[in-house]
Image 1 (cartoon, rainbow, N blue to C red):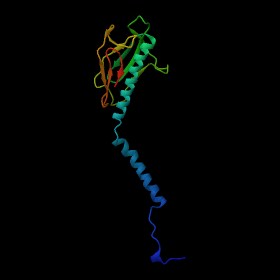
Image 2: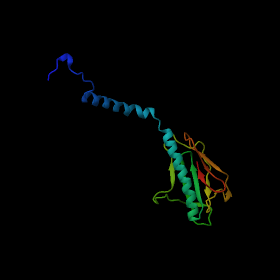
Image 3: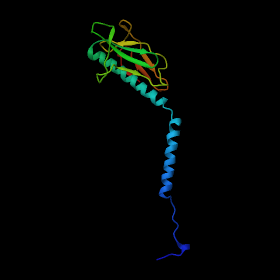
Image 4: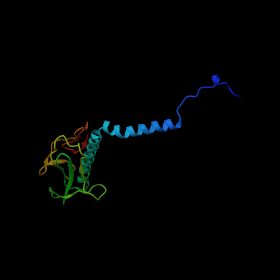
Length: 164
């Protein structure tokens, strides 16, 4: 049945073309605005914090498992690497410690705009997993802070427990 023009129901909504154009414009805006408004520094800082925490835990576990000294070396405010003693009797680290996958040396490097708040001092884990400074002198509790990361990494003095 045909309705007179003044009785036709009014349809409202968007056409498919209008929706596609709006979505395209929002996509273009998101491509240019989102990266500028979202700083990646806190994200990368937390990632570097977590990598440092994992590296220190790996160092302690490797020292215990291999019953050898593992040295944690910080070179500048953006690098950390692990070295291991050639034998159980040697307190001097001469070889790069291989990472968990076996291929590469265990080390980390921060991305731009991420660094340690202060360059941490180098230390070692002895064969029992306890932190030591220099030549087998017991180390004090170590605190390592990454800029823009809210938590501090702590290495306990007696046990070598690594936590944040």
